[in-house]
Length: 347
Ligand code: SF4
Image (cartoon, rainbow, N blue to C red; front, side):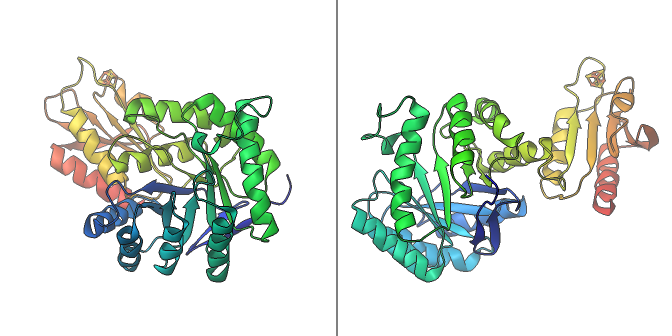
């Protein structure tokens, strides 16, 4: 498909050749305004572009107005079951609405939401999931085609309304179905795609399963916004998205951190040290490679393509700072870290 659709979501642009936007979702009820504002702003400093919030009732829809005032990234209202909550969220100033066509209600209700979004130039994400499939299940030759049939039927209404500021998502917790669905969707629709495995589990398994499902997509640069849904601290979701986008060369201005697994040669407290370095790099947006290695025997040589690094010196609690395989000097931990962060900040 040649020309792909792009448009604004608040102050961001999505679609066609624009950046893949990283997103996450608030992990408390939306009336917890101060908690969610802090979470959103913290994650935005790490590189999150969009934040989504559940709207269970009127109080949540009204809370979005306060949240919107206190954050600088676009916010998305997640609507299920009651289209009137979408109308209230639109009045609260949200930048995008996410609906599930399987439970939004009647066609008239959906057209009312489309009309309200059209008036304020607010895009809509259509999120088809297995709950949307009831009347389509088994209607085609495969589960993937059932999903797409459900999407087609909803899209007919949007096309009739001449509304094309749409983001599409096809939610599944199966990595192989995820790949198949989005490869087909990319061929079939010109709209931006929201990619990500749903309900993928805790940090390690969820990241691995997500990477497996997303590999066929990201390696072809398919996907316009990404969420790695994890049953974990939301910071891990942003880290996982950044690792994937960096690894596939989709975002270059991110750091690459190399950390050795440690072994009997390690004479320093490598794990807390590397965690401190990783925490610092959460807020660095540069194409820089940093290494944290346990010993000088293999460490410096193996990490000689790193711009900067710290290795154990072979002596207890003595840290060797290096750059491109050449030693800079020996320091205690605090001084080594201070100098490393200084080099990173000036890079
Ligand atoms: S870099 Fe040194 S400490 Fe780390 S795993 Fe390799 S040999 Fe062991």
